Length: 337
Image (cartoon, rainbow, N blue to C red; front, side, top):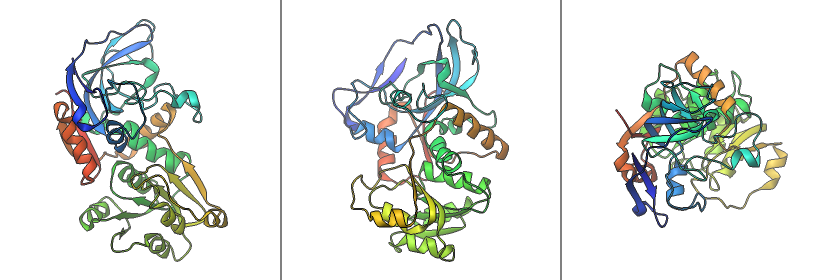
């Protein structure tokens, strides 16, 4: 079977397409014939060596969808022929995050999904809705679940809330879709007026170009009559966090997810406690939350937004596209027809 490995050292130039043996399912395991995968910023960071120092060679990517082709002895949760997504943390099935649950992650501490076949425990997958295409379903395990946990699980999102989404990458677009499905108002930010127009087409109620309006937190607050927003989906990191605090209401929720602009910055701690801000770090989610998210998506027939796709052998080009920041929504990887 084909697999893409990071070989020898980190860097896009060290990605190599190789041949590996097709795995066989042991007791409690399944082999999934992968159909499609997708990219997250975490994958770009991992290949560059910014996402942790893992043992090489490593097969990257956390997100994919496929069909169960082989089931080992004792497997009961799924059967051959089922269409499934592997979960980002294959051993985190329910409850809050733990060291054990977060210790095993596809495309990091474990080989990931940039390959034709994936060997995984039967407890590490979920069945996906029929209405989605393979490429759409491949978009779900990381970005969609991260947005769901940020807003619904930890944020207690409700109708009438106001949500700020930063940018138009995968997490932010899913957050926009989930917020609108819940009856919330959405403020979207971007440096591109064209992308902001597309966000409005998806339902964004207000948009802010943060290049022309650097104090976008104040602008977002103004949209609420000065009260402040209920939620900020914080994917920017160090350079945007201060603006997120400026945007939220007293007792508002900032879901800290990304570090696109860096990891270190002087912070006004007084603003955090005077606002009684709820600051919550989010690292994807568990299998139970994934299954709950899929029920909601099926009810509203929410379709992931696919930016563009690349074949598996052109993974490097896909990651370069990710690094450029030109995408809107998710970047897909074609594995099998």
